[in-house]
Image (cartoon, rainbow, N blue to C red):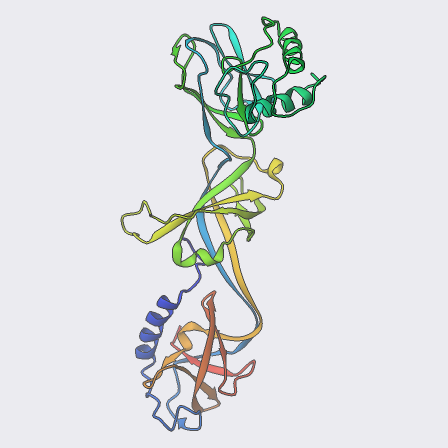
Length: 354
């Protein structure tokens, strides 16, 4: 986490302990905790009680990249004779790669292409293929999970349009499925290299820009799915987005000096087409969690730890000091929500000398 980090309860307790010593205050006795007693020793400085909105916010280092990273494995053995350019985008029915001069084309679907389909076959992969054919204009059948002679006829028309042998059958040597259009991240097997079924040929991503970042488990409350964020981009601009996913497994961070468990989160942008920048570029994610509206707040270092438990403040009026007990609410932005003790906006409270 970076500057602007929310103050946690544990940190606040440590601050209070240090504050109590720095102010050299007289501890409140049992009769003084109600706020009736006076103390003639003035604090070194004062700050006003403020009324307004308190936002629990934080910043985190993130990485700008692309969504849906995945590997594309070869569907047949042979020599790699063509691959797309790194960074290019491949859409439905376009070439992903070629083995022995035979193109493997992209079709959309969440399941893999794992067998050669022919008339009489049934399954989810059949329905995926048929829906692609229909979207491409090769119709004459009802898209369902059954590969019929009508499906085979549509496949033959598709094969003819690409100058391929018209068999009516289609398999992993002909197409590969992906959830949508893909961006080529890297090449796993270059031109002239031998490909083997199941071995990676390409590494792809989705085409949508996203940010990934890690957050301490203790602060994950700031970033639930749907939480709105802003992202400071490498070109100096800021883009709006929201948390699209929150990891379920906490892992230790990479920093040896920070062994707190962290979860990985993903941010999607409200206007992804307007986000520019290199892959794996560093960015800053600005998070705003809970907001308490129209509350009284004081600087965290104004708090006193009371001997009987709880916390208090020094209320300063002119040359007199009155110590009052208060209830605490949310900590954020170096301030704390307070109530009780007859406090109101503008009242001066003691703080360490700045």
